Length: 249
Image (cartoon, rainbow, N blue to C red; front, top):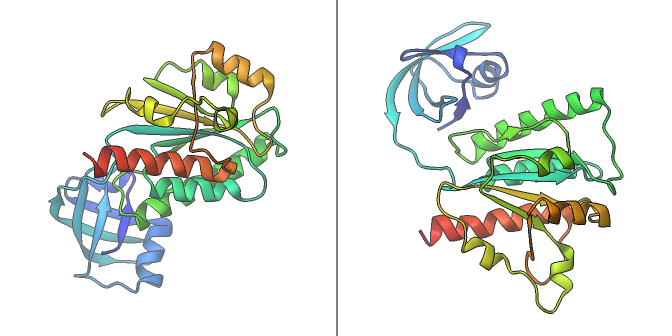
C-alpha cells in the first residue's frame, strides 16, 4: 500500500488533507480513486490506514480507517555527520542511510573537503536532501523521516551535548595492529541512546581535526579491517547496529 508523510497542518482529527506533490502523485501517477486506501504517516511517528474520500484538482481528502501499530525505527538514534563529498555522493548517503534507519544527517565542511557550499547552494542542496530522505522513508516503510541539518562546522558538531555516544570512523584505526574495534564501542551502547558518527571526506581527516576530535572526547573506531570509501562508511555502521539491536534483540 502506498505510503505518504503528511505534515501537521494536514491532520484534523481523523481527517487527512493531502496537497502539493503528494496529491499530484496520488492522482496523476498512481491514478487512485475515492475508496482506494493509502498509508498516512503523522510527523509524531503514528501511522494510519486511510481511505480516499474525495479528490479535487488541488487536494486529496482522506479519512482514517485504522491506526496501525508499526515498529520500524531503530531502537537507537543514529546521527551521521558527513564531511561534504564530491559529486552526488551525499544524495546516495542520505538515500541509503535513510533506508538503513538513520535518525539525522549533518553535512559539514571538512578541512580536506574539495566541495564547498555557499549559502545559496547549501539551501538548494538541503531541499534536495530533504526530498530524498522523504522518498526513501516512504519506499522503506519507515514511520519517521530523518532530519537533514543545515551545513555546520566540525567545531559546532564536536561541542554538541545531545549525544550519549560520540564516535569517529577512523582510517588510522584500520591500519594499526591494535585497533579500537567497533564491537567494543557497541558494547557500551544501550537501547534509546543517541549516537553521533563523524565521517571524513575523500581525503580523510586533517591532523588538526583528529586532535580536536580527541580533545572533545570522541572515541575512534575501526569500521572493519579494510579502508572504506566515505560514501560506504555510514552504511557499514548502520548495518552493523541494525543487526546488533534489531536482529539479535
